[in-house]
Image (tube, rainbow, N blue to C red):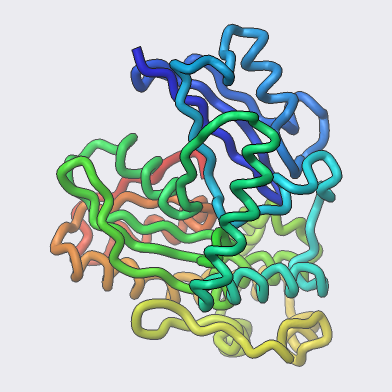
Length: 320
């Protein structure tokens, strides 16, 4: 028998789950137990909840796997991590984004941060464990839970371990990395910024997708292309001086109908992400596409991906 205990510690959602020979025995998010939405930090209550049901993390037969090796703060600060809604135009969010971009660009920094993260987690768990990258975890959820032995796997979200997107070739039961995109150019960050401008909690940015169906995109899309566009192998985001609430783009958008702003954001998101998927399919030669990460909670985007001539079928992992 093979037990695997999975941990997720992050700045907005932490959880734990245990499986036996590939079948889930129990899983719970910390916020469900602490009654705090977007609970950050270490999933202490979740681990106790699993232990009460027979999942002893100290047992030698249990292999512990943790995601996000470059997210040390939840491990070092634990219950002191700030939780709750996030403003994607706030200076703290911009600093967080810049930090992740530095992680993407500096191998030496990644080594140092991973070491600090491992120390914090070892202190919390008091045992050995394995660590899996943020986007590799997303990719594994889409590929190993998917219907195909071979697939093009694309992940895209706000940011994680210094990246906002990755592409993999899933074949022979393994995930082969193809490309990675730094956090600074994040489509997830872009969509969250639009949500903040519209007065919508970025953690529920799906409301922007719904609102987009009632708007006309042309004028807003023309402005929003300054915030996000496609480039070979990834995306292009704005410079640092434009990462603020007072940026001219946001000021101009505030005079438009919210539905038109949402429609423009949806169009720009699709224009940016579709070429990345096409690029990944061209690299693998496989038109079966598995998707994971918060950006692919956008059902309109997913429909556009399915309509690409090179895409045969898509599988979207439901847990983003």
